[in-house]
Image 1 (cartoon, rainbow, N blue to C red):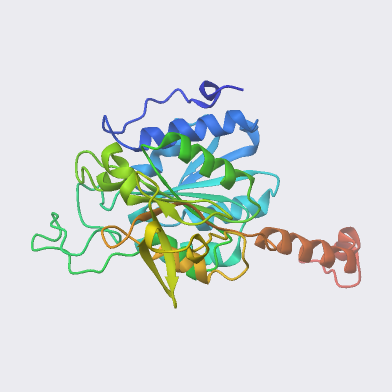
Image 2 (cartoon, helix red, strand yellow):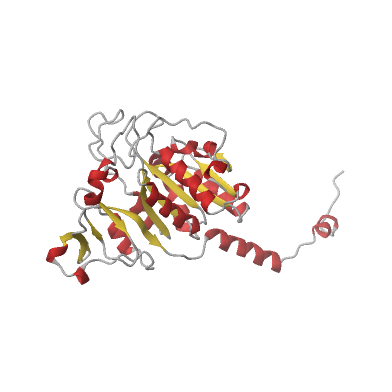
Length: 329
């Protein structure tokens, strides 16, 4: 398989320069690389620029209603557990009107993948502030600045019990490919937040971690089993002071004092602490925050159905024509 095999005949209707293009390109690359069957792959979306995704990828798909992609995707997975089900959603679609569906999807640990395109704005409806917009953000719906404190999607996902939570950046294609491959192979709900630029309504939203001249000093790449080190010269690190991660210079501390990233620990507390780090107070973490495996919702439901069937073997014909049947004249 090649990435082109997963390209549909529909021309993408995204603005030139939109970060959605890179997510689409990497997703097609991953599907081809891992030998995904087009007939066994389903993309479900809600409403928004990102939710056009199913039109542009040559698999099964459903463009659903605002915020309800998790409910429909759960139904698809329960109806046919052999399918690889993906959700394409945005910060507004998933975290605002779809917030309730989103947290319960994560709580249940349905075996599907969630790509959340975060551009900190409502792009399709022309530039209103979203749940992830910065406080004070001036938009068409907040002319005096948004009064809301921004939501952190990774923190919300971990608080809801996400077994896999990760972050990627639209311009770092190689790293995004690694993250999406890990998500593809995860058994359970794999949540990936993707920092994505909206050239028209919120250009430069994540410039501080996407531009080459800034990235090394402002980005913290999470690697399992390794100390949290960053900087152009790899001269800074993260140390845990009580329950507070702090930036330190490596020249001032022992290497043993640095925080070691553990994505596989059952307790999500450490991952949650890292999810609270953000620029400019600290570097912005990207990569896999948490990756553990537990029972999936769909597997448990099907096990219950199989058990019920084994205990109660009904005779449909006998039910229809037995002593409890009657004739209506």
